[in-house]
Length: 422
View 1 (tube, rainbow, N blue to C red):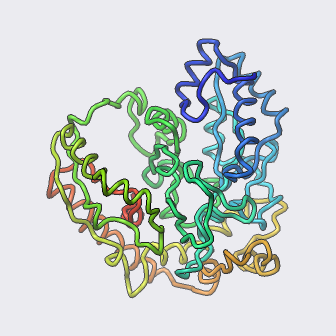
View 2: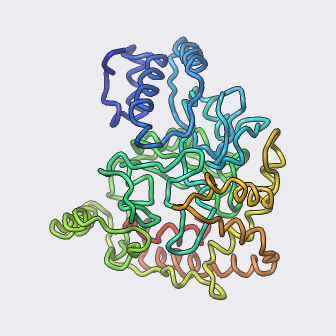
């Protein structure tokens, strides 16, 4: 197919479904189109860590065409795919190259059962960014030893020598790629077959080009026995209006990352300041929402420390070893099965796993060295939930009678949500 019958960067999954049903494109043609896009751009972007064999993809696509189904999503490379799909599952670590899971992750199996074709595996921050921690030496977001340094398609010039670990634009992939996402409530999407960090923090969720696509994917991946799912699916409760939503806003002047996390890009900063873009967005939301509260106050990063340590980091360090080794116990032909073996592998292959720009693995070493004990972890978790949820998010929602709290994506809002268990 010389020219795709749609705009590849902006077309949503729902759009593709309509094109398929109208007979304007086939699943096999979609495979060709998106593989061509990956080949064209991935040398620079390094967004895709591996793709399935083309012949296998085309064969599956042709079978789906007979059923008027569509396919094409990518799973993150920390989600198990059965060896028959032709891709490793590495979480970006060379130590897991060649390891063979006995089955695909539950999320992957649900997608395939729903008619999806797993086109490839997305690059990620190695081990979900659970590798090093010292300020000034953190691995830059989006780097892995297997996939290299991924790059936003919306940032010109690539990575800079003086970039901070959050990059020169954003360390949050969704808004930097103009995508929508939702982190499902912990426990309602199976984590089986996903390389873990902490069972109390991990939750697989979709990233899509439209809210409608999000709803359709949630219908597929959410376990309806773990939560209440709308009878006609999540899309059935989409209203296309703010009229019934009570909104509280955070002050963007107070909620943003410090420069050592994400270095401001001068042009963007000037544009947002001169055009008052935050204020314009808030005013627009206020004009549409049922109620609007400006500004509300939530606990900040300093409040999320217990006994002098960050609560999320403490919990992840305390849980990683047990969670990781439980996962690797289900692998065949793995080069590592314990956290100690993983740490040693990186030392032996330091030229690739610990190169000059990404020189340490301090989170892994801390998880190996520290035996925090159940009592410490329980107290830390209790404090995290009390500060962020009970005396944070919940009390603000109740005090102002809100449905949602909105703030800048480039902020510690996600840290607060993680500490609350959201």
